[in-house]
Length: 523
Image (cartoon, rainbow, N blue to C red; front, side):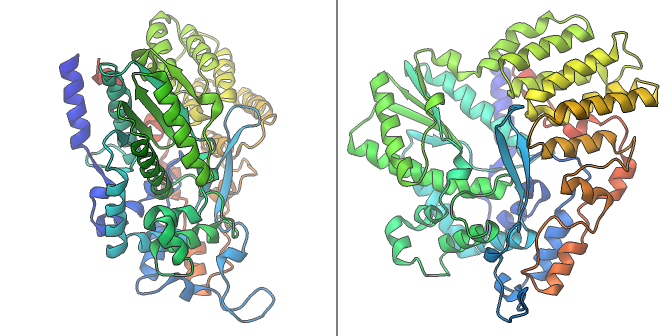
Protein backbone atom coordinates (compact mmCIF):
# COMPACT_ATOMS: atom_id res chain seq x y z
CA UNK A 1 0.00 0.00 0.00
CA UNK A 2 2.73 2.49 0.98
CA UNK A 3 4.54 1.92 -2.31
CA UNK A 4 1.33 2.56 -4.28
CA UNK A 5 0.66 5.70 -2.22
CA UNK A 6 4.18 6.91 -2.95
CA UNK A 7 3.84 6.26 -6.64
CA UNK A 8 0.50 8.06 -6.71
CA UNK A 9 1.92 11.02 -4.78
CA UNK A 10 4.73 11.33 -7.32
CA UNK A 11 2.24 11.15 -10.18
CA UNK A 12 0.27 14.00 -8.63
CA UNK A 13 3.41 16.16 -8.33
CA UNK A 14 4.42 15.46 -11.93
CA UNK A 15 0.91 16.17 -13.21
CA UNK A 16 0.58 19.71 -11.90
CA UNK A 17 2.19 23.13 -11.62
CA UNK A 18 1.31 25.83 -9.13
CA UNK A 19 0.27 28.94 -11.01
CA UNK A 20 3.01 30.87 -9.20
CA UNK A 21 5.47 28.77 -11.22
CA UNK A 22 4.00 30.08 -14.48
CA UNK A 23 5.35 33.01 -16.45
CA UNK A 24 3.10 36.04 -16.78
CA UNK A 25 2.05 34.96 -20.29
CA UNK A 26 1.34 31.40 -19.11
CA UNK A 27 -0.65 32.75 -16.17
CA UNK A 28 -2.74 34.89 -18.50
CA UNK A 29 -3.53 31.88 -20.71
CA UNK A 30 -4.40 29.85 -17.60
CA UNK A 31 -6.89 32.39 -16.24
CA UNK A 32 -8.52 32.83 -19.65
CA UNK A 33 -9.38 29.13 -19.93
CA UNK A 34 -13.08 28.35 -19.72
CA UNK A 35 -12.65 26.10 -16.68
CA UNK A 36 -10.75 28.86 -14.85
CA UNK A 37 -13.45 31.41 -15.65
CA UNK A 38 -16.24 29.12 -14.41
CA UNK A 39 -15.10 26.63 -11.78
CA UNK A 40 -18.51 25.36 -10.68
CA UNK A 41 -20.40 22.56 -12.41
CA UNK A 42 -22.49 23.40 -15.47
CA UNK A 43 -23.70 21.15 -18.32
CA UNK A 44 -21.03 20.87 -20.96
CA UNK A 45 -22.94 22.85 -23.59
CA UNK A 46 -22.15 26.05 -21.67
CA UNK A 47 -18.95 27.33 -23.31
CA UNK A 48 -17.29 30.60 -22.28
CA UNK A 49 -13.99 30.33 -24.16
CA UNK A 50 -15.22 32.09 -27.29
CA UNK A 51 -16.52 35.20 -25.57
CA UNK A 52 -13.35 35.49 -23.45
CA UNK A 53 -11.15 35.16 -26.56
CA UNK A 54 -13.12 37.76 -28.53
CA UNK A 55 -13.10 40.25 -25.66
CA UNK A 56 -9.39 39.61 -25.15
CA UNK A 57 -8.64 40.25 -28.82
CA UNK A 58 -10.69 43.46 -28.81
CA UNK A 59 -8.93 44.81 -25.71
CA UNK A 60 -5.43 44.38 -27.15
CA UNK A 61 -3.78 47.80 -26.92
CA UNK A 62 -6.79 49.29 -25.12
CA UNK A 63 -7.76 49.96 -21.52
CA UNK A 64 -11.22 49.01 -20.39
CA UNK A 65 -12.18 52.59 -19.42
CA UNK A 66 -11.53 53.60 -23.03
CA UNK A 67 -14.38 51.24 -23.96
CA UNK A 68 -16.95 52.75 -21.62
CA UNK A 69 -20.12 54.14 -23.14
CA UNK A 70 -19.82 57.92 -23.28
CA UNK A 71 -23.58 58.51 -23.30
CA UNK A 72 -25.55 57.79 -20.13
CA UNK A 73 -29.11 56.54 -19.86
CA UNK A 74 -30.35 60.11 -19.40
CA UNK A 75 -28.66 61.22 -22.58
CA UNK A 76 -25.91 63.12 -20.81
CA UNK A 77 -22.36 62.73 -22.04
CA UNK A 78 -19.55 61.59 -19.84
CA UNK A 79 -18.01 58.18 -19.38
CA UNK A 80 -20.07 55.62 -17.57
CA UNK A 81 -18.52 53.24 -15.10
CA UNK A 82 -19.76 49.71 -14.34
CA UNK A 83 -19.58 50.76 -10.68
CA UNK A 84 -22.90 52.59 -11.26
CA UNK A 85 -24.78 49.65 -12.82
CA UNK A 86 -26.54 46.75 -11.14
CA UNK A 87 -26.31 43.14 -12.33
CA UNK A 88 -23.04 43.62 -14.17
CA UNK A 89 -22.10 40.07 -13.17
CA UNK A 90 -24.55 37.24 -13.62
CA UNK A 91 -25.55 35.77 -10.27
CA UNK A 92 -27.45 32.64 -9.44
CA UNK A 93 -27.98 30.79 -6.20
CA UNK A 94 -27.23 27.29 -5.03
CA UNK A 95 -29.10 25.97 -2.03
CA UNK A 96 -26.68 24.35 0.45
CA UNK A 97 -28.87 22.28 2.72
CA UNK A 98 -32.38 21.95 1.33
CA UNK A 99 -33.51 24.73 3.66
CA UNK A 100 -32.41 28.34 3.93
CA UNK A 101 -28.64 28.21 3.57
CA UNK A 102 -27.42 29.22 0.14
CA UNK A 103 -24.28 30.06 -1.80
CA UNK A 104 -24.15 32.72 -4.55
CA UNK A 105 -22.26 31.82 -7.70
CA UNK A 106 -21.27 34.47 -10.22
CA UNK A 107 -20.27 34.56 -13.85
CA UNK A 108 -18.12 37.67 -13.96
CA UNK A 109 -18.79 40.13 -16.78
CA UNK A 110 -16.37 39.04 -19.56
CA UNK A 111 -15.00 42.56 -20.13
CA UNK A 112 -14.23 43.05 -16.44
CA UNK A 113 -12.83 39.54 -16.15
CA UNK A 114 -10.47 39.87 -19.12
CA UNK A 115 -9.40 43.35 -18.04
CA UNK A 116 -8.60 42.11 -14.53
CA UNK A 117 -6.64 39.15 -15.90
CA UNK A 118 -4.71 41.46 -18.25
CA UNK A 119 -3.74 43.74 -15.38
CA UNK A 120 -2.79 40.98 -12.95
CA UNK A 121 -0.64 39.21 -15.56
CA UNK A 122 1.31 42.23 -16.75
CA UNK A 123 4.93 41.22 -16.34
CA UNK A 124 5.81 43.64 -13.53
CA UNK A 125 2.54 43.01 -11.67
CA UNK A 126 2.85 39.24 -11.96
CA UNK A 127 6.46 39.29 -10.74
CA UNK A 128 5.39 41.45 -7.79
CA UNK A 129 2.62 39.00 -6.88
CA UNK A 130 4.92 35.98 -7.15
CA UNK A 131 7.46 37.69 -4.90
CA UNK A 132 4.77 38.65 -2.40
CA UNK A 133 3.48 35.08 -2.19
CA UNK A 134 7.05 33.98 -1.48
CA UNK A 135 7.02 36.36 1.50
CA UNK A 136 3.72 34.89 2.69
CA UNK A 137 5.38 31.44 2.78
CA UNK A 138 8.59 32.32 4.65
CA UNK A 139 7.44 30.57 7.84
CA UNK A 140 7.78 26.86 7.05
CA UNK A 141 5.62 25.97 10.05
CA UNK A 142 2.63 27.52 8.23
CA UNK A 143 1.91 25.72 4.98
CA UNK A 144 -0.71 26.66 2.41
CA UNK A 145 -1.93 24.04 -0.06
CA UNK A 146 -4.63 25.95 -1.90
CA UNK A 147 -2.73 28.00 -4.47
CA UNK A 148 -4.47 27.21 -7.80
CA UNK A 149 -2.87 24.48 -9.88
CA UNK A 150 -2.63 23.77 -13.59
CA UNK A 151 -2.89 20.18 -14.71
CA UNK A 152 -0.01 18.83 -16.82
CA UNK A 153 -1.90 15.77 -18.06
CA UNK A 154 -5.37 15.07 -19.46
CA UNK A 155 -7.07 15.50 -16.11
CA UNK A 156 -8.92 18.75 -15.42
CA UNK A 157 -7.35 21.49 -13.30
CA UNK A 158 -10.17 21.04 -10.80
CA UNK A 159 -9.49 17.33 -10.43
CA UNK A 160 -5.78 18.04 -10.00
CA UNK A 161 -6.56 20.46 -7.17
CA UNK A 162 -8.62 17.80 -5.39
CA UNK A 163 -5.86 15.22 -5.91
CA UNK A 164 -3.45 17.65 -4.31
CA UNK A 165 -5.82 18.21 -1.41
CA UNK A 166 -5.90 14.49 -0.69
CA UNK A 167 -2.14 14.10 -0.80
CA UNK A 168 -1.20 17.35 0.90
CA UNK A 169 -3.85 17.66 3.60
CA UNK A 170 -5.04 14.19 4.46
CA UNK A 171 -1.77 12.34 4.06
CA UNK A 172 0.44 14.97 5.66
CA UNK A 173 -2.00 15.35 8.54
CA UNK A 174 -1.62 11.64 9.26
CA UNK A 175 2.15 11.97 9.06
CA UNK A 176 2.11 14.83 11.61
CA UNK A 177 0.69 12.40 14.18
CA UNK A 178 4.28 11.20 14.57
CA UNK A 179 5.28 14.59 15.97
CA UNK A 180 2.16 16.08 17.56
CA UNK A 181 -0.56 14.95 19.95
CA UNK A 182 -3.24 17.57 19.31
CA UNK A 183 -4.91 19.24 16.34
CA UNK A 184 -7.29 22.21 16.34
CA UNK A 185 -9.67 22.46 13.39
CA UNK A 186 -11.26 25.77 12.42
CA UNK A 187 -12.34 27.78 9.40
CA UNK A 188 -13.51 31.27 8.43
CA UNK A 189 -17.20 32.11 8.38
CA UNK A 190 -18.41 33.16 4.90
CA UNK A 191 -14.85 33.74 3.72
CA UNK A 192 -15.45 35.09 0.20
CA UNK A 193 -18.43 37.16 1.31
CA UNK A 194 -16.37 38.74 4.10
CA UNK A 195 -13.28 39.81 2.17
CA UNK A 196 -12.88 43.59 2.33
CA UNK A 197 -11.73 44.64 -1.13
CA UNK A 198 -9.37 47.32 0.22
CA UNK A 199 -7.53 44.59 2.15
CA UNK A 200 -6.30 43.13 -1.17
CA UNK A 201 -4.08 46.16 -1.63
CA UNK A 202 -2.86 45.81 1.97
CA UNK A 203 -1.96 42.21 1.24
CA UNK A 204 0.04 43.04 -1.89
CA UNK A 205 1.71 46.32 -0.92
CA UNK A 206 1.47 46.35 2.93
CA UNK A 207 -1.08 48.43 4.78
CA UNK A 208 1.24 51.42 5.17
CA UNK A 209 2.06 51.68 1.47
CA UNK A 210 -1.55 51.10 0.44
CA UNK A 211 -2.87 53.89 2.63
CA UNK A 212 -0.18 56.24 1.35
CA UNK A 213 -1.09 55.36 -2.25
CA UNK A 214 -4.84 54.91 -1.89
CA UNK A 215 -5.47 57.27 -4.81
CA UNK A 216 -2.80 55.78 -7.04
CA UNK A 217 -4.70 54.11 -9.89
CA UNK A 218 -1.62 52.34 -11.20
CA UNK A 219 -0.68 50.02 -8.34
CA UNK A 220 -2.10 46.55 -8.87
CA UNK A 221 -3.78 46.34 -5.46
CA UNK A 222 -5.95 49.36 -6.26
CA UNK A 223 -6.58 48.08 -9.79
CA UNK A 224 -7.94 44.80 -8.40
CA UNK A 225 -10.00 46.68 -5.80
CA UNK A 226 -11.52 48.91 -8.49
CA UNK A 227 -12.44 45.96 -10.70
CA UNK A 228 -14.12 44.18 -7.81
CA UNK A 229 -16.17 47.25 -6.92
CA UNK A 230 -17.13 47.62 -10.57
CA UNK A 231 -18.51 44.08 -10.47
CA UNK A 232 -20.55 44.70 -7.34
CA UNK A 233 -22.36 48.05 -7.74
CA UNK A 234 -19.66 49.79 -5.73
CA UNK A 235 -19.67 47.40 -2.77
CA UNK A 236 -16.38 46.84 -0.93
CA UNK A 237 -17.41 43.75 1.04
CA UNK A 238 -17.16 40.37 -0.63
CA UNK A 239 -15.69 38.99 -3.85
CA UNK A 240 -17.48 36.87 -6.48
CA UNK A 241 -17.44 33.12 -5.97
CA UNK A 242 -17.11 30.70 -8.85
CA UNK A 243 -13.80 31.26 -10.68
CA UNK A 244 -10.17 30.27 -10.19
CA UNK A 245 -9.20 33.93 -10.56
CA UNK A 246 -11.21 34.81 -7.46
CA UNK A 247 -9.74 31.83 -5.64
CA UNK A 248 -6.33 33.34 -6.39
CA UNK A 249 -7.36 36.79 -5.19
CA UNK A 250 -8.74 35.27 -1.99
CA UNK A 251 -5.34 33.61 -1.49
CA UNK A 252 -3.74 37.06 -1.55
CA UNK A 253 -5.70 38.07 1.55
CA UNK A 254 -5.38 34.68 3.24
CA UNK A 255 -1.64 34.57 2.52
CA UNK A 256 -1.33 38.03 4.08
CA UNK A 257 -3.18 36.68 7.12
CA UNK A 258 -0.65 33.80 7.25
CA UNK A 259 2.19 36.35 7.30
CA UNK A 260 0.57 38.45 10.02
CA UNK A 261 -0.14 35.35 12.08
CA UNK A 262 3.47 34.23 11.65
CA UNK A 263 4.73 37.58 12.95
CA UNK A 264 2.53 37.32 16.03
CA UNK A 265 3.60 33.74 16.72
CA UNK A 266 7.27 34.76 16.48
CA UNK A 267 6.64 37.69 18.84
CA UNK A 268 5.12 35.27 21.35
CA UNK A 269 8.08 32.89 20.90
CA UNK A 270 5.83 29.91 20.12
CA UNK A 271 7.86 27.14 18.50
CA UNK A 272 6.19 23.77 18.97
CA UNK A 273 3.48 23.89 16.29
CA UNK A 274 2.56 23.27 12.65
CA UNK A 275 -0.29 24.86 10.67
CA UNK A 276 -1.79 23.51 7.46
CA UNK A 277 -4.18 25.78 5.58
CA UNK A 278 -6.36 24.92 2.61
CA UNK A 279 -8.24 28.07 1.59
CA UNK A 280 -10.15 29.12 4.71
CA UNK A 281 -9.71 25.79 6.51
CA UNK A 282 -7.02 25.63 9.21
CA UNK A 283 -5.46 22.72 11.06
CA UNK A 284 -3.21 23.76 13.97
CA UNK A 285 -0.96 21.03 15.41
CA UNK A 286 0.80 21.13 18.79
CA UNK A 287 1.77 18.99 21.75
CA UNK A 288 -0.21 21.18 24.09
CA UNK A 289 -3.91 21.98 23.51
CA UNK A 290 -3.45 25.39 25.14
CA UNK A 291 -0.81 26.25 22.55
CA UNK A 292 -3.17 25.39 19.68
CA UNK A 293 -5.96 27.42 21.27
CA UNK A 294 -3.64 30.39 21.81
CA UNK A 295 -2.59 30.32 18.16
CA UNK A 296 -6.29 30.26 17.23
CA UNK A 297 -6.72 33.36 19.43
CA UNK A 298 -3.90 35.11 17.55
CA UNK A 299 -5.49 34.08 14.25
CA UNK A 300 -8.80 35.54 15.39
CA UNK A 301 -7.12 38.87 16.11
CA UNK A 302 -5.44 38.89 12.69
CA UNK A 303 -8.71 38.11 10.90
CA UNK A 304 -10.67 40.78 12.80
CA UNK A 305 -8.41 43.43 11.31
CA UNK A 306 -9.24 42.04 7.86
CA UNK A 307 -13.00 42.01 8.47
CA UNK A 308 -13.23 38.23 8.89
CA UNK A 309 -13.91 35.89 11.77
CA UNK A 310 -13.54 32.24 12.68
CA UNK A 311 -16.49 29.86 12.65
CA UNK A 312 -17.02 29.07 16.34
CA UNK A 313 -19.26 26.08 15.56
CA UNK A 314 -16.49 24.43 13.53
CA UNK A 315 -13.64 25.13 15.95
CA UNK A 316 -12.57 22.12 18.01
CA UNK A 317 -9.48 20.48 19.51
CA UNK A 318 -8.81 16.76 19.17
CA UNK A 319 -6.17 14.41 20.56
CA UNK A 320 -6.73 11.81 17.81
CA UNK A 321 -4.87 13.21 14.83
CA UNK A 322 -5.09 10.03 12.75
CA UNK A 323 -8.84 9.79 13.03
CA UNK A 324 -9.39 13.50 12.51
CA UNK A 325 -7.02 13.68 9.54
CA UNK A 326 -9.54 11.71 7.52
CA UNK A 327 -12.95 13.25 7.06
CA UNK A 328 -15.58 11.40 9.12
CA UNK A 329 -17.77 10.82 6.07
CA UNK A 330 -14.92 8.96 4.39
CA UNK A 331 -14.28 6.80 7.47
CA UNK A 332 -17.98 6.03 7.70
CA UNK A 333 -18.21 5.04 4.05
CA UNK A 334 -15.08 2.90 4.17
CA UNK A 335 -16.64 0.90 7.00
CA UNK A 336 -20.13 0.69 5.47
CA UNK A 337 -19.89 0.39 1.71
CA UNK A 338 -19.32 -3.36 1.63
CA UNK A 339 -22.78 -4.08 2.97
CA UNK A 340 -24.86 -3.42 -0.16
CA UNK A 341 -26.35 -6.28 -2.14
CA UNK A 342 -29.22 -5.28 -4.45
CA UNK A 343 -29.37 -2.00 -6.35
CA UNK A 344 -32.02 -0.68 -3.98
CA UNK A 345 -29.99 -1.71 -0.93
CA UNK A 346 -26.98 0.02 -2.44
CA UNK A 347 -28.90 3.27 -2.93
CA UNK A 348 -30.44 3.05 0.56
CA UNK A 349 -26.95 2.73 1.99
CA UNK A 350 -25.96 5.91 0.14
CA UNK A 351 -29.10 7.56 1.48
CA UNK A 352 -27.96 6.72 5.00
CA UNK A 353 -24.56 8.26 4.23
CA UNK A 354 -26.32 11.42 3.01
CA UNK A 355 -28.30 11.65 6.25
CA UNK A 356 -25.23 11.26 8.43
CA UNK A 357 -22.81 13.35 6.34
CA UNK A 358 -24.74 15.73 4.07
CA UNK A 359 -22.98 17.34 1.11
CA UNK A 360 -19.84 15.31 1.75
CA UNK A 361 -17.19 14.32 -0.75
CA UNK A 362 -17.80 10.66 0.08
CA UNK A 363 -21.44 11.04 -0.90
CA UNK A 364 -20.44 12.32 -4.32
CA UNK A 365 -18.00 9.44 -4.81
CA UNK A 366 -20.58 6.89 -3.64
CA UNK A 367 -23.11 8.13 -6.19
CA UNK A 368 -20.45 7.96 -8.91
CA UNK A 369 -19.87 4.30 -8.03
CA UNK A 370 -23.61 3.66 -8.07
CA UNK A 371 -23.86 5.21 -11.52
CA UNK A 372 -21.04 2.94 -12.69
CA UNK A 373 -23.06 -0.02 -11.47
CA UNK A 374 -26.26 0.82 -13.34
CA UNK A 375 -25.17 2.73 -16.44
CA UNK A 376 -24.72 -0.39 -18.58
CA UNK A 377 -27.93 -2.16 -17.51
CA UNK A 378 -30.72 -2.71 -20.00
CA UNK A 379 -33.21 -3.27 -17.20
CA UNK A 380 -33.47 -3.03 -13.42
CA UNK A 381 -35.68 -5.52 -11.62
CA UNK A 382 -36.42 -3.25 -8.65
CA UNK A 383 -39.19 -0.66 -8.94
CA UNK A 384 -37.55 2.25 -10.75
CA UNK A 385 -39.97 4.74 -9.22
CA UNK A 386 -38.80 3.67 -5.77
CA UNK A 387 -35.18 4.21 -6.79
CA UNK A 388 -36.07 7.66 -8.15
CA UNK A 389 -37.81 8.53 -4.89
CA UNK A 390 -34.75 7.55 -2.83
CA UNK A 391 -32.40 9.47 -5.13
CA UNK A 392 -34.55 12.63 -5.11
CA UNK A 393 -34.56 12.56 -1.31
CA UNK A 394 -30.76 12.42 -1.38
CA UNK A 395 -30.65 15.37 -3.78
CA UNK A 396 -33.12 17.39 -1.70
CA UNK A 397 -30.66 17.96 1.14
CA UNK A 398 -27.41 17.62 -0.79
CA UNK A 399 -27.01 20.19 -3.60
CA UNK A 400 -23.37 19.26 -4.03
CA UNK A 401 -24.42 16.05 -5.79
CA UNK A 402 -26.80 17.59 -8.34
CA UNK A 403 -24.67 16.78 -11.44
CA UNK A 404 -24.08 13.06 -10.73
CA UNK A 405 -27.63 12.67 -9.37
CA UNK A 406 -29.15 14.01 -12.57
CA UNK A 407 -26.93 11.61 -14.51
CA UNK A 408 -28.38 8.73 -12.48
CA UNK A 409 -31.91 10.09 -12.96
CA UNK A 410 -31.37 10.24 -16.71
CA UNK A 411 -30.41 6.55 -16.70
CA UNK A 412 -33.42 5.56 -14.58
CA UNK A 413 -35.80 7.53 -16.80
CA UNK A 414 -34.32 5.84 -19.89
CA UNK A 415 -35.55 2.49 -18.51
CA UNK A 416 -39.17 3.70 -18.40
CA UNK A 417 -41.12 3.18 -21.58
CA UNK A 418 -44.22 5.27 -20.89
CA UNK A 419 -43.81 9.01 -21.79
CA UNK A 420 -46.84 9.89 -19.67
CA UNK A 421 -45.26 8.18 -16.67
CA UNK A 422 -42.01 10.06 -17.26
CA UNK A 423 -43.81 13.40 -17.44
CA UNK A 424 -45.71 12.60 -14.26
CA UNK A 425 -42.50 11.75 -12.41
CA UNK A 426 -40.80 14.89 -13.69
CA UNK A 427 -43.67 16.98 -12.39
CA UNK A 428 -43.55 15.27 -9.00
CA UNK A 429 -39.83 16.01 -8.76
CA UNK A 430 -40.41 19.63 -9.75
CA UNK A 431 -43.13 19.94 -7.12
CA UNK A 432 -40.79 18.53 -4.48
CA UNK A 433 -38.07 21.06 -5.20
CA UNK A 434 -40.47 24.00 -5.43
CA UNK A 435 -40.44 23.96 -1.64
CA UNK A 436 -36.75 24.87 -1.58
CA UNK A 437 -35.63 28.51 -2.02
CA UNK A 438 -32.63 29.55 -4.13
CA UNK A 439 -32.45 26.67 -6.60
CA UNK A 440 -30.90 28.30 -9.67
CA UNK A 441 -28.18 25.67 -9.93
CA UNK A 442 -30.72 22.86 -9.65
CA UNK A 443 -32.81 24.29 -12.49
CA UNK A 444 -29.76 24.41 -14.76
CA UNK A 445 -29.16 20.69 -14.23
CA UNK A 446 -32.88 19.91 -14.42
CA UNK A 447 -32.81 21.44 -17.88
CA UNK A 448 -29.95 19.13 -18.84
CA UNK A 449 -32.09 16.17 -17.73
CA UNK A 450 -35.02 17.21 -19.90
CA UNK A 451 -33.32 18.91 -22.84
CA UNK A 452 -33.39 15.78 -25.05
CA UNK A 453 -36.87 14.83 -23.88
CA UNK A 454 -38.57 18.21 -24.14
CA UNK A 455 -36.32 20.99 -25.45
CA UNK A 456 -39.10 23.56 -25.03
CA UNK A 457 -39.65 22.93 -21.31
CA UNK A 458 -39.44 26.32 -19.57
CA UNK A 459 -37.30 27.24 -16.59
CA UNK A 460 -37.24 30.66 -14.93
CA UNK A 461 -33.46 30.84 -14.48
CA UNK A 462 -31.99 33.25 -17.08
CA UNK A 463 -29.11 30.91 -17.88
CA UNK A 464 -31.70 28.26 -18.73
CA UNK A 465 -33.67 30.71 -20.88
CA UNK A 466 -30.54 31.51 -22.86
CA UNK A 467 -30.34 27.88 -24.05
CA UNK A 468 -33.42 28.40 -26.21
CA UNK A 469 -33.44 32.19 -26.53
CA UNK A 470 -29.91 33.36 -27.43
CA UNK A 471 -30.79 37.07 -27.27
CA UNK A 472 -31.46 36.80 -23.52
CA UNK A 473 -28.67 38.82 -21.92
CA UNK A 474 -27.20 37.54 -18.68
CA UNK A 475 -24.73 40.39 -18.14
CA UNK A 476 -25.57 44.09 -17.95
CA UNK A 477 -23.35 45.70 -20.61
CA UNK A 478 -25.06 49.10 -20.85
CA UNK A 479 -21.91 50.77 -19.54
CA UNK A 480 -19.89 49.62 -22.56
CA UNK A 481 -19.38 51.13 -25.99
CA UNK A 482 -21.56 49.64 -28.68
CA UNK A 483 -18.73 47.71 -30.34
CA UNK A 484 -17.62 45.76 -27.28
CA UNK A 485 -21.19 45.43 -26.04
CA UNK A 486 -22.18 43.86 -29.36
CA UNK A 487 -19.27 41.43 -29.25
CA UNK A 488 -20.33 40.20 -25.82
CA UNK A 489 -24.04 40.07 -26.54
CA UNK A 490 -23.70 38.34 -29.92
CA UNK A 491 -21.10 35.70 -29.01
CA UNK A 492 -22.85 32.42 -28.14
CA UNK A 493 -22.14 30.80 -24.79
CA UNK A 494 -24.33 27.82 -25.70
CA UNK A 495 -22.81 25.26 -28.06
CA UNK A 496 -25.74 24.04 -30.13
CA UNK A 497 -23.72 21.22 -31.67
CA UNK A 498 -23.02 19.77 -28.24
CA UNK A 499 -26.74 19.85 -27.47
CA UNK A 500 -27.41 17.97 -30.67
CA UNK A 501 -24.72 15.38 -29.92
CA UNK A 502 -25.38 14.65 -26.24
CA UNK A 503 -27.41 11.63 -25.21
CA UNK A 504 -30.64 11.39 -23.28
CA UNK A 505 -28.65 9.52 -20.65
CA UNK A 506 -26.04 11.89 -19.29
CA UNK A 507 -22.56 10.49 -19.96
CA UNK A 508 -20.38 10.08 -16.93
CA UNK A 509 -17.69 12.25 -18.51
CA UNK A 510 -20.13 15.17 -18.28
CA UNK A 511 -20.24 14.98 -14.50
CA UNK A 512 -17.12 13.01 -13.55
CA UNK A 513 -14.34 14.90 -11.84
CA UNK A 514 -11.67 12.20 -11.93
CA UNK A 515 -10.59 9.94 -14.77
CA UNK A 516 -9.36 7.54 -12.07
CA UNK A 517 -10.49 7.17 -8.48
CA UNK A 518 -7.57 8.33 -6.35
CA UNK A 519 -8.88 6.44 -3.33
CA UNK A 520 -8.57 3.18 -5.22
CA UNK A 521 -5.10 3.95 -6.50
CA UNK A 522 -3.96 4.33 -2.95
CA UNK A 523 -5.45 1.02 -1.74
